[in-house]
Length: 212
Image (cartoon, rainbow, N blue to C red; front, top):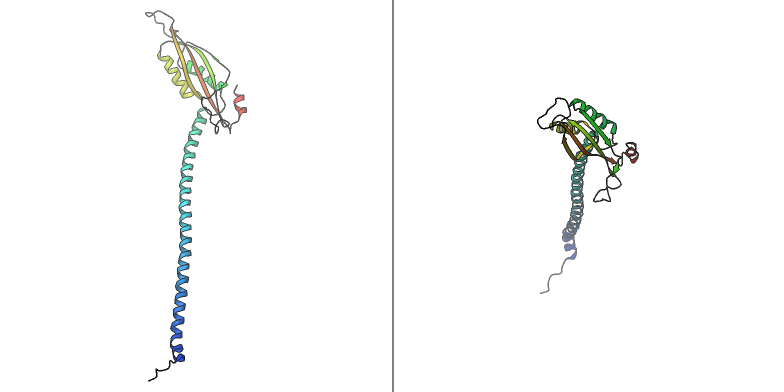
C-alpha cells in the first residue's frame, strides 16, 4: 500500500498564518527586549544624574549656609571696627570720654605707628586676601581704686572700635597704705595694649594706609 501523498498546498494554507504569527511574535518579543534594555539604560542614566544633582544640591545648600554664617560673622566684625580702617580718633575720644565718665584723675597716652602683623604660618590662599595690622598703645592712668582699671578696660572693650589686647599693666601706689584721698590719684597704672585691625581684599590697602 502506497503512503498518501502530502498535500503541500493544504499544509501551506493552514500553516502560513500560524508561522507568520510566530515570526511576528518573535520579532515583537525581540524588539520588546531591546526597547526594555534601552529604557532601562536611559532610566539608569537619569537615576545617576538625579543622584548627582541631589548631591550637588546638598553641597550647594551646605555652602550657602556656611557662606551666610561666615558673612554674618564678617558683618559683625566689620560693625565692631575690627575689619576695616583703624580709627584712632575714635579710640582717643573713647579713652577720654571713658576716663571722664569714671572720674579718673588723669590719663596720658601715646600710640605707636601701625605695623603689619607677621603671621607664624602663611597660607597661600589667604596671604593676598587678608592682612592684619597692629598699633601699640602706651598709657598711664591715675586711679582712685584698683577696680577703676578693670572698669576702664571693660568700657573700652564695649565702646571702642576694633580688637584690643592688654599686654601688661603695672600699678604703683602714690600714697601710704593708711592715707586715702577722695577723687585724687592714689594709684598710677602704666599699661601697654595692642590694637588690631583686619584689612580684606574688598577694602584695599589704601584704607590701611589712610589710618596711619
